[in-house]
Image (cartoon, rainbow, N blue to C red; front, side):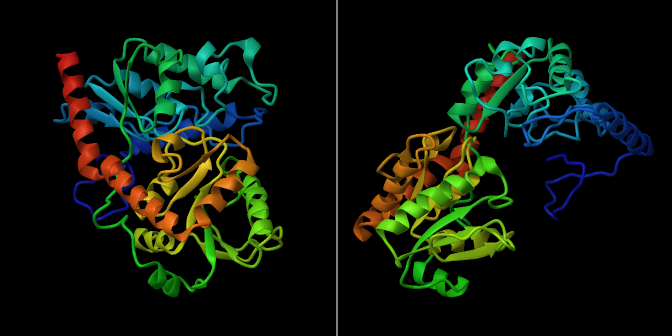
Length: 385
């Protein structure tokens, strides 16, 4: 794995400081981008990258001994133009929508979305003003990648559909391969009782869990929808249900919840997070849009049933009423019904737990995913010879 900034002692990860020329170029590129951003506003608060920041790695990558370049998260590492200059076969694993959009990493999935119709002056969102940087970035991608041959890997069927119906990637080879988990050593069930003791959680309550990077701050994660659903649940099960939230500490002056809340904060250690999953009775993922959310996959690997909306990649993770519950999109009453269905019967919960674990191992274990990547690599090499 080639990275710019190496933050691990794993010898298989290769970093390397930028050359003086590379550092100067990045400073200039960032200043040019800052100038372009003047006057630009958007109603989409999720991350944007406009593809003009380069770490100057094209010559190194083209000259390396690899047979295939498997791109993952490349923002700030490879520019749009850099990707067009790569000469080796490319497998590109998409972790969001940026590759086939403008500068947006996540954008609403409408039938007439710009990534499906093209970024035209007349279909610019009403929430944007100033220079149309998303259209400018999309046009740069279309020009730079016109002759580039990509094999696209998407972790979910939903993202694969978005990519396959986009103007930029329509007609390209698109595969669905999930992200892998270490289901043998890290993401596995632990004793619920021991986990609760270790985390200081009550032993005799029904625990609903929610977790996300950044906690409840990201509207896309559906914190408001979670509150509505939990309010409905606690009305049916008063004084029995409590909530466990990881990803942030208790916010000062935050809204009151309808039940006690245990704030676990930002958990960086995977084994500690596996313990948190093992301590709960049900995981709720009330997101408005998701690719293949790690929290849902990890929870199921730890034997925790997941209740979520039937959107994005969540149907790839949850089998309705077998490993959890899929509710109609954004219907908090149905989401609450699913939570209550999981919590109502201890024996049912144990059956769901075993099924969730079995499905996670069968679908997301590292050897399973590795074998799928080998097939993608073989196909890519055969098609480029």
